[in-house]
Structures are given as C-alpha cells and as structure tokens.
Amino acid sequence: MSIDRVPVSGGSIAVQIHTGTTEPVLVVHGVSSQRKLWGWLRAEAPHLTLVAPDLRGRGDSVDVTGPSALAQHADDLKAVVDTLGQGAVHVCGMSMGAFVAVEFAARYPSAVKSLVLVDGGVPVAPPAGLTRENVEAVFGDKIARTQQHWNAVEDYVDFLVSTSLPLLDSSDPLLRTYAEHDLADGSVRLSTAAVVADATDVFFGDSRFGELTMPIRFLHAQWSVGADSEPMYSPQVIEGLDLTSVRPMMGLDHAGTIMTSAGASAVGAMIDDALRE
Image 1 (cartoon, rainbow, N blue to C red):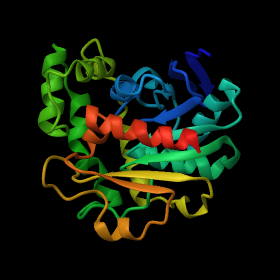
Image 2: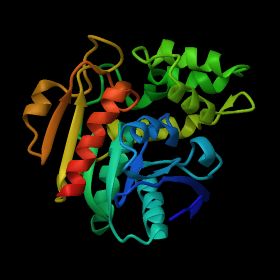
Image 3: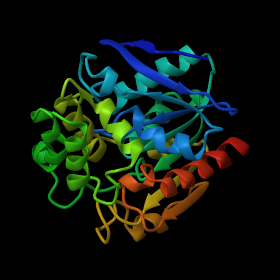
C-alpha cells in the first residue's frame, strides 16, 4: 500500500503512508499544520498504519487551486480513501482536522468506521472576540510565518515555540522535522487564504456533528496555548457529551495533545481502542 499523490479538484494532494501492522487509520492535521504533525504518534505507536495527507493549501499540497473549506477537505479525503481501496477506515483528526473528520463522516458515513477527535470536532463557541470579520487578525501568529523568509530552520522553530507552541522543546528532533516540511527555500508552504477560510468554517459554519452515528472518541487538552490558559472546551461542554469515550489530557495544551510523547501516547491508545472495537 503506497500512494504519493491523489487527484482532487484543483490538482493533487500529497499523502504519506507509515506502514505498521494495523489496518489503515486516516489522520488529519490542523489548520496551519501538515502531515509531519503525526511524527510523534508514529514514534509512540509504530504499530499503527497511518495514512497522512497534506491538506490542500499546506505542505506538498500548497499549490492545489480552488477555495478551501471543511466540505472540500472532506471530498479530498474521500478521494484518498477511494484510492486506498479500503471502503471504510478509522479516522483521527486533531484540531481543525477533527472538524474536517466530522464533516467527512457526515458526508460519507459509509467510509468511516469510527472517529478519534483530538481537541476539536466537537462543536464549540468562537473564542471571545472572534468574529467572521477578524479571523485573519486573530490568527495572525499563524499567518505571520508566511510573510517572512527563514534563513535557518532553527530560527523558524524558535518562532513557532515563541508564538503558538510554548510548551514544546525547541531541541526536539521531531519538531525540527516538522518545521523542515513547512519550509521550501526559506518560505513557509501555507496558504493564508486557506487558513482564514477553514478557521471561519470551523467557528461559524454549520456543524454536522449531531448527524453522526459511528463510535466517537474524544480527547481534550487541559489548556489552549500554554500552561494555565483557558481550554478550548469548557467543563460544561465536556459534561454534556455522550460519546463512546471522553478523556482529559492533563498537563497538556492544544499543541501538546499530539506534538509531545505524552500526548501522542494517549492518542495512540485511543486509536487502539477504536481498532479493537
């Protein structure tokens, strides 16, 4: 099982497969991320077979043309699953990728065996102060990286840690690998238009979460960005959930849910639960 590019509307998206001993698990990264996000999961759970696309507007799929939206990503994922020839797969999404996973499962329920959602996917109110009109400004730290040239990957890593990844270790080799995949000739391969469109869709689009009938497992971080910050999901939202499994990730912020060994280990265990069902 090996695919490199999958034709989609506007071009083709890049897909990397990490072969393990399990059936394929489709893994979907976040709004300003790319497929190397799953390096930590690969390190902690090498037995998992991971199918990891770069979503349109990111990484090796940055040049795919056309508008970006959760529904478009869902259609792109369906093309990936069809190319795999699996019929249906388990899906794990992190952050915006979890919202994409929900949309995918709602549009193509016969293609999804179960969902593992990591700090995303479950409907959530927009953060205080976020409006449709100021999404680009609020996501400025993610967009800022695209507007400058990076002469050294170390400088880029330091920028990431100082802005959106404050609890990560800048010397982590997996973080360096992740950062290297972002860059091409010193430029970040990330579409500003895609980030703004997808973030707008996450917070102001119509969620189809309530339509889902497959098993759903949900992991949520204690904090959002950095220690002691307000989490993305409040205790009130968590208490109201009736899902297959809900697990807190204490001592971790949003990025740490997958970009640390502790977070990746917990996600891997949850995927194992889904595979055993």
